Length: 452
Image 1 (cartoon, rainbow, N blue to C red):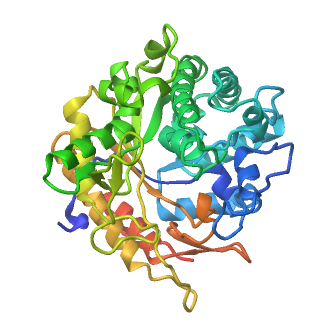
Image 2: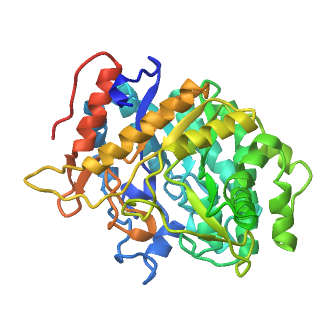
């Protein structure tokens, strides 16, 4: 189906997404303290190209031109994250007003341009002093997060249309504390499970504060979800796919939307499960105004008793993968959304991230990223298919506005609709940016494109 033939609601949000550490730079300016990503990236061997986010896209100084670019794209939503160490450098101490000033300028600039602010309070940049005290495995980090959420929402209030407490708690807990691939780079299953519970508890604990300080805003959380497919029809592989689903998807969905952890995963983790205190699950499962879903690909898994629970082995992607090695599997997005509708009582959904990294090349002042255009077309069509079947999706956010610091891969992977020349910080819209601008204009009954 040609995506230009599809029709989305008139109030549908067309946006892009970014994250603070990946674009802001200015890591030691205006009172900002160090984060776990500053520490992790500065340790040799942790980042593929040896880079850090110290400068990144210099968005801290170039935010006005970046917002002007968003306006030229025709966006009506921008999902960004707030850097905790820029607001409270010590993590749980005095508020740095200069940090809040920056985000107030950003929010006001978005509103002046007719773009709705979607703020994420935690996109992985935990203040380093909190990690020195134990980080997310420590229950005290929950209280620090609530105090930080209170400071932000007291200042920004309901000028921010949507607040997400957390982005992808699976990554923050399992990649950071179990697999060592993300900051803080630890490898301890027990710590990761404790971190996952405290991330969810921090989300739920902050919801009351967010609603009190910003009653006119919507409040929720963002999860990354992957459909799990068995490598073969064999019963062992089918059981492996179910276990992976418990490990990756249901471990976060069930506490949030059902008030309980999934029984199979709880049993599978044995005595490594986190301690749950009275009232924790009721706090975690406080009603959501929206659920953000990040979708990139699927998992194909086989049974493997030689590895810890969930005792699965991932298989290589089929077809031509993206530069991240991920399969292009748009039908998985429809599958995820229909599954959510079938199995859970849901608030409205926003597709909070969707995109792909490709080997973009700047030639004669332009980037012809036709593979990314195809990726976006297929996934937006898959999103529409879910909506046709009744899933209440209110918006789509492409990842990402511009090329940036891609975590452990440094600057080697480019996800942006806009090419960034990191030496000059020039922003050069790719073909995908013009395509996306044209789609948005077409949905609004007008013609338009973006120019460099």
